[in-house]
Image 1: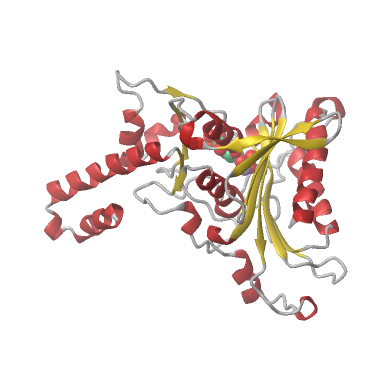
Image 2 (image 1 turned 30 degrees about the horizontal axis):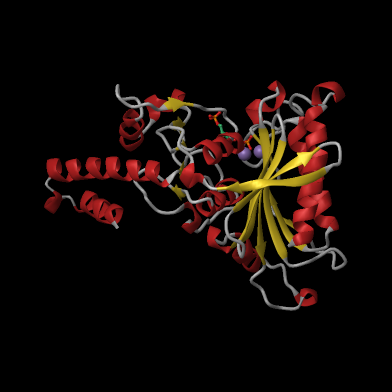
Length: 344
Ligand code: AHG
Ligand code: MN
Ligand code: MN
């Protein structure tokens, strides 16, 4: 795992340089308007370059068997015995596409899994059911998760399963090495910030509408911040406090963000930093408990300080209770069941 982390660090140092020099070296803009990635987004030149950097460095470790990237339709299976190891790495090489060309914070998100298969590396089969079993595991199998934020400083935030807490490292660009710059603990952060793309509010479901309204009541002291790069919005939430959400709505029925390489690693970090990460949209289930059925699956997400998540749960419970009351819960099993599940 250490070698994989080193390869990710090395990649991020290369990516940092590409990002910093993108306007000078002609790396801004789209590849071309009809190149879209697995999620249907138009690919930027930097999406492709950063993906290649990650893949190249990870393969060279000889420790990986599967690489799952936002930019590749299919998982990359390392068949060559000389390079094959037994770890899976899932990553979003560049997060924050809308901010790439305007010099606003963007990031790289990653998570590492150890293969479940105990067979000898040599005899490992790559048949599709085996593969699916390896890739579509829930977030509790992550042994290391992290992100790198490319901002005024480049910082790596990382958590390792067997170690407590979340650690932050800042890149010394002169020495090209990361220096430890402290633990991240969200529980003692007190800034009152809510972070959500409010331009979607007309399409929100009732739970999101009522919850976000709580932050805008006359006597509350909350302010809104929304960068539009999840890495940056989450980084601020971890260091200042508050919440971040990308809910499902009437247009995006499954939300926008991807389960395996975006939400799982961020949820892992949030929980290890003392916060909470749930699905929202009438579900209080943990993000990490999702059992994905597709590589590029999306999910609604609500994360932040536990106090903020409790606010959502209480406000949504009231909606469900009112609905039960209005509809007479005894004759409306669906709503009653929903409320029961939500309570637990
Ligand atoms: P990506 O650049 O990897 O496709 O991800 C962009 C994501 C995420 O970073 C951010 O939270 C969200 O898109 C912003 O979406 P909106 O522009 O719809 O708010
Ligand atoms: Mn992303
Ligand atoms: Mn991306």
